[in-house]
Length: 113
Image (tube, rainbow, N blue to C red; front, side):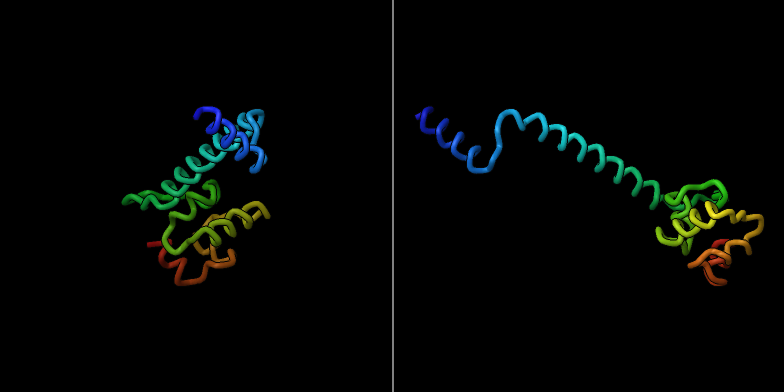
């Protein structure tokens, strides 16, 4: 009975192309996927955390994940803010944010509140 099971298992491994020497690679890939999943969950938790009363986010310093927490700012606009900053734009006044694609007067009003 054990011989039949062993042969069936070996045949399945041959058919799928899996061998015992590949097991280390599969474990490494799984570990990598676990780390990526935990990082994505952590980032999503940071991204969706509401601003606390009186909390302010500096558009000159915050990363895209933090900027995404601002009202009316989603991932695309947060990335635009970071890109504008990288291109040399400095935000000295709230109105300076109007230079960022995706931020108009209505969004600016929500941000200033």
